[in-house]
Image (cartoon, rainbow, N blue to C red; front, side):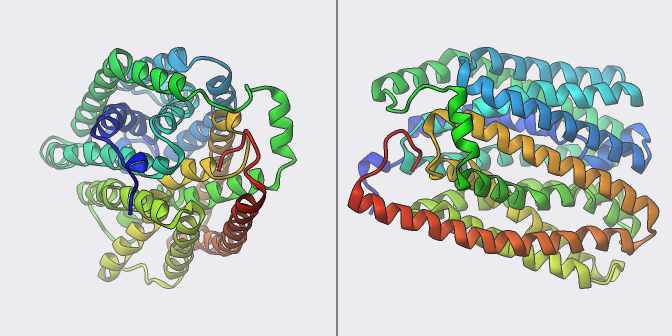
Length: 431
């Protein structure tokens, strides 16, 4: 039975919704060269290797920006960081429309990482965590990602219709206008209401944790839980990095049109998120363990990656490919609320939440850079199915290893909770 203290209020849901408007816009810019691969390629006529290079540049830049952004989120007040994120990404969207040259897109890839993936996200995740107590966090993150997915999905039929009628460029233009507008609206609501409400709530409960210092970073690097958190983050984001290359796979090996590919991509990315992100948050709250939910999601990734290795690459099997795409994306969407919630139960210093999120995103950015670079090599060096099977073969092995580690981490946290029941919970850690 849910206690009154842990029940999500309408005010919390409304605040989460307002923040999600900006997040939906940030996601479009942050994943513009990956999730919208075929749309950007069709709009600007880029070659596959050029899109892969832009994806690699963005991933590398995001790793660096996340690294510093995480520290900034803990050291400084997030107001300046959030402003940089919102306004900077809107400027990047305008630049894509006005100056679509390939060399300019390289600069945009860096700036998107600088403004959004470095400064906005660590702060936004801290705001969501601060909206409720520890037992509410998995649900708050779940609703947050669900709203962002719904907002993205609402545009799907309109953008697909524009693509079918007027082409990829007009569809991309409509998408950028819509989401940049959402970022501006979210920015205004954030400063007029959400930030004040969160600051007042933080003052009323006055955190017990020590203030951030770089000594805490040193302590993190000595703690096995820190490395397990990083590995779980990599395992639950790897399927998303691989899904970037499902779009050219659908077109080259399965004969799908650009409009169909974009439709499948949107539904896989956002349609599954509408169901899985709140469900993951609710289940984690019911079980009292986010790691158990993450373990299940990684097992799903093992099954989906293995199935991709034996699936015939033939148009007759396209429906099976679409199912596997949804499964792979499901691993990432379950992980969306689970990753920040996992940080909250990691038993790492509470004063380092922003830093941990920043380092986590930095590491997954490095992973994405490696995946992009390897994909560019594999897909240009090996024709047809061979290059794609190389990607999913490596994924299959990695996911098996991470599943074993997820089970170990889950048991490790469970034993620590049992000790707390006897000895008491140490001060200043996230549980």
